Amino acid sequence: MKFEYHQPKNLKEAGKYLLLNNSIPFSGGTDILALMKDGIVNPDHVVNLKTIDGLSDIKFETGKGLSIGALVKIKEISQNQMIAENFPVLKIAASEIASPQLRNMGTVGGNLCQRPRCMYFRDDFDCIRKGGGTCYAFEGFNKYHCIIGGGPCYIVHPSDLAVALLALDAAVIIYSDGKQKQIPIDDFYILPESDAMSETILKPGEFVTGIFIPELKSEARSTYFKFKERDVWDFAIVSVAAIIRKNNGIIEWGSFAFGGVAPKPWLDNAFNKSIAGIRVASGSIENVVTKAFDNAQPLQLNSYKIPLVRNILRRVITQLSA
Amino acid sequence: MKIKVSFILNGLQVTVETEAHRRLLDLLRDDLNLTGTKEGCAIGECGACTVVMNKLAVNSCLVLAGQIDGAEIITIEGLMKNGALHSLQQKFIEKGAVQCGFCTPGMIMSAYALLLSNKNPDEEEIKEAIAGNLCRCTGYKQIIEAIADSEI
Image (cartoon, rainbow over all chains, first blue to last red; front, side, top):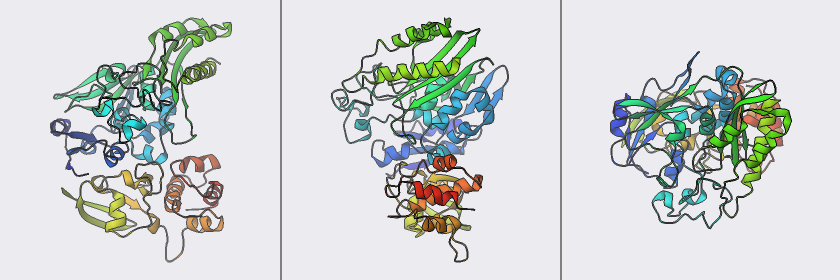
């Protein structure tokens, strides 16, 4: 791996370098260096965003919400007291990411922009996501692939933070063409049917500068459950980010997001609507949960994810409404 | 493309000129002859290359040369003082926490980073701190005991 290394002083300079041919943004390096080592990504230009001031802050404004800079480390989110108190779902998701070493280096922006873990993508296969003509997972080993939203590529998005942020209705702030703009996180990620070679809307010259999370009502309770095969340092088989507000035994409002099920962090608006207004003690939770993902289209080896996601839903709803 | 980086390595000021694509691990092992730090998977999964950077455990295989300018780095070679093994090193021997030894430097550096911020970790905290370090010999039990018995 040989490349030119750029150290921009501000957003504008970074944007300029990122317009160079075959240029990538660089922050913690925990995913991109592994991709470069395996020859999946071979940049001519590496743009170190860490030299830019003002992207490393965590700021909470009462009445508005929480701003987190793209260069904030995962460890900082997992250990921030204010985040633990106001946004438990985000704290738990951050704590569940990878290993201490990687949380010490990995950044929020990098976590949102990490590439998929599909073994065909990460290995020496000329798959659709790398510009080839075939998705090898479709008829191959697809135990870890998506059950909804797939085609022509069947990855799942690996970010834990993104799932929590989606439930929190966060916006991703990106630098684009001289200015910063907020994109709802659900619009930041795309499905393979619109572009199978990218997970996000980012175009050359654009990069993530931060995220914004609107304040939650104080009575909201939230959590994140990540099911993995190995207890530590593993990606989600299925994960659920859950936020509910309960009043007099009734779930007034719920916001759920799902990881490990789709090529992007997955939002099911119909599910969120169906959870609102149900009485916890009435057994209606079961009616709602058994309908979740009834439109899934699992592949040969991953239909187990449907009962798994429903079981996780039962667990988190029971926990939050207790 | 060459870049120049200055950092503190095991208490000494070091300046190196190197290619931008090289990793901290390459600088340590190949240029500075500190081969205690091991290369395992080289993609951040095994932890064999763990060193302490600015008081935190990091995978040196995933740190680019350009990122260490101004940093303070401690490797396994930096733990021994005045010819005496560090408490962690001594306890790893006493508790039988070393078998093939390949994971040991990384394991000890993760433990060292833990002890820097937490002088009396409990078992869960120790397990958490070494979650990014794979050992295929010991079964971890002796490693956890060794760390629990160590002091900084």
